[in-house]
Image (cartoon, rainbow, N blue to C red; front, side, top):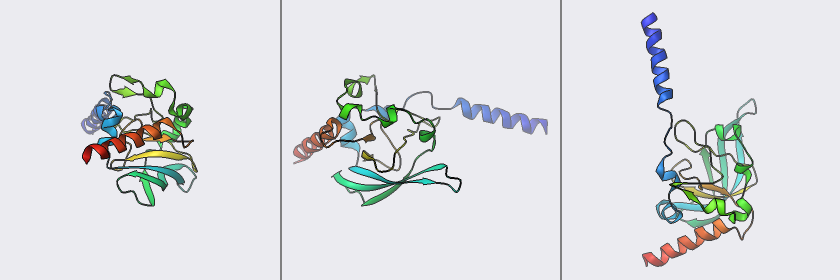
Length: 177
């Protein structure tokens, strides 16, 4: 029995030692690469944030599509995110970086940039939080956030990040002709 218990403790310690220690490079690629590799990009509004029976956020987010910029996006899309993002909600997660004009948003520190989705959990997954009724520029690449700028808050039509993404998409279309 002591051997089994010791084995379980060792296994638990080994799994926590294998936690995310190196930031995944694909989460901080340059913007032109992000736009090129992402199959679907849309401006979306958070319609609903799911909760369990006790009222605790369960991570299910229902998005309503406002404008499709690239690819195919359904009128409504439900995605599951780690509830951890809401537990560590911060002013940064609610920021639009002054309409994304703040120079800090555009800086790259190696392969890492600053964004609303600064949190990375122990499995190397981004852990965003959202607010009902708010609008986000969504990069749909699978079923989770794959870049620090995947779900940036957009508060104004003249937002610099939204404008840059539209410009990169247009440039890509011209290049592909």
